[in-house]
Image 1 (cartoon, rainbow, N blue to C red):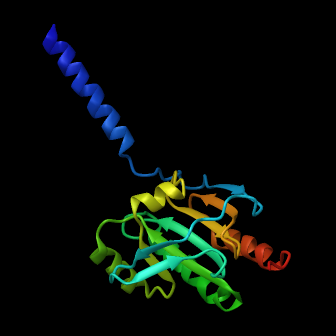
Image 2: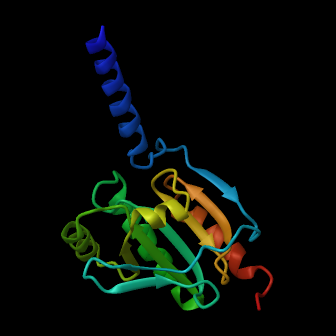
Image 3: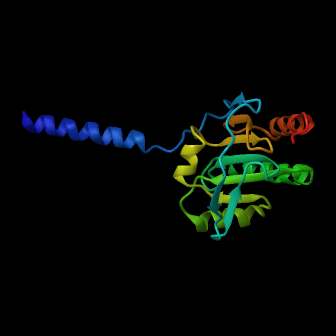
Length: 181
């Protein structure tokens, strides 16, 4: 009887450990979610991470432009090619209008991220995310995109893959909104 209890205890412990260590979920295609925050949420705190080359990439509320902050997996997400293209188009269209594209890669292999960036000729910032940063952002699924005002307050939180047109609409609304001082 002791052996049965011990085995059950081990199985329960392994189940709990496995569930706690899961990566964020990827919503099914066509099931993205959005939650407008209207700039009322707490600002995203400042952070500095490293890019795939080991150089610092940071975010500081109040000093950065309007920011599209996206967490995704550039080497294994099924739509990563489309994701790169979409982010590049946002960078090209909105970069000169005070919008910064900042991506956090949910990856543990810098050489693979470096290769993905090179393969797609990414001109926007891509940092290697860290678990503490993902926890701070309350990351629930991949990809997740935030549109942050100039003080770092979330205007939108979009979970799942959203087409370019959806992000453009949210950015246009943010840019045409009241001036922030």
